[in-house]
Image (cartoon, rainbow, N blue to C red; front, side):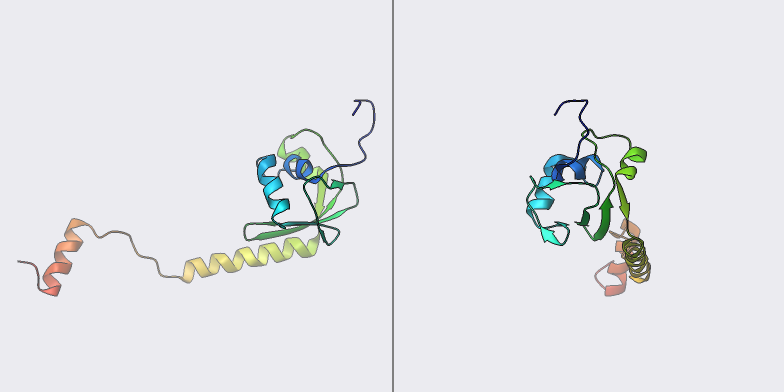
Length: 133
């Protein structure tokens, strides 16, 4: 594409990479091929072109984003510029924050083991059980 032409569409995998949803294009291609990305409610292929105004539903790990494409960029730019390429819906943001808070609360309330017992702890346990000296 000539540099003086305005870009009207871009491959979904390249856009996801430029918008910093995925660290590499290969990861973006894998996510799109695996059905983790939908454009306007439809499952798409990595070569699908997106344009400003499209709605994307992106599943990344436990997080789900619903964003509207606001711009296109052929290069991966700093995060501050990449955030200008999309606008996340308010409902999506609230749902993500709610789920993150739930995960945090579950992690706090779940008892965890301190790890392997120290030599001192092991000796105490053996004495208690009756196998120690």
